[in-house]
Image (cartoon, rainbow, N blue to C red; front, side, top):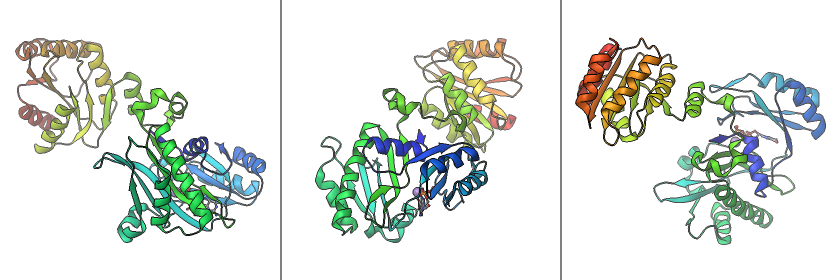
Length: 379
Ligand code: GDP
Ligand code: MN
């Protein structure tokens, strides 16, 4: 789950990383009030789950509360790369002398967390990595040993930060960022820019914070930060129903049992010239309610023109899944063509049940390839 900038900063603050004081606003009037409370120059920042807000015009300095109100009116409702701005963060403006970049994320290849620090902050880190890789200090952390004070110092010296007061502050922030990363079970904590003010104070001006969904049950306070309004409505429906659902951009809706089988199904659809619109993983289940839930999610996507069930019966028996499909189609009306491929345990019985009792838009196939060809031809 991705957090908004201000939520990430709240977690930074809890870990002891310096951030600026600010307020959330959802209307121009609230933005004005926030600016009055904060006093002086403020920065009005669009809160969207996508980067590059500055370049898109979603970040504006305001010298007066009136100006903050006007900027808020302009930024609210703005579309930033497909994300509509519904919230703002009004923060006391900082003077910036230098912009650095600091992050920690997982390096899956090394199976370790990886710190990156560079004095060339404020821009895309990919750009820095390409243009001047020597400017990017990279350090892996052994997760069993954890963070060590030398690591912050190593990063600071390797990145070429030479002001002693800055070295100390940045090294301390490195340690605290590791605490935040581990403590909140994050997958990414990025500070871009990490600024140095003209007075020599180092602080986090931006945050990108991604927490591990699978650990959220241990962090109810972080789980509460989820903005349900921002999620795709189908993904929300799937989450509520406990269905594993992924949106793609083709026209075939796919239901399978087991992630590996579903992945293979996507490949076969592609091989025969179709494009998957989405997929649901029924997992080990295939009971009527599971099938109804998955079909509801899949058919709520208008892009779907035909549906493919790809079931391999192992522990789950094909006759049970066939019963589930029949019960589901008894409860809901689906006019789209549906192709069902059943194989494995009790496949013959399952196919017979569907051939006898299923509505006429249901087509039964024996193999994955023939089912894929059939569903693509019916779309
Ligand atoms: P992003 O564009 O989504 O990465 O948003 P950031 O929060 O990183 O802000 C983008 C840029 O806006 C920063 O790199 C700064 O140059 C500028 N900016 C943001 N906050 C302030 C501030 O308090 N004072 C000043 N002077 N500039 C700011
Ligand atoms: Mn940024």
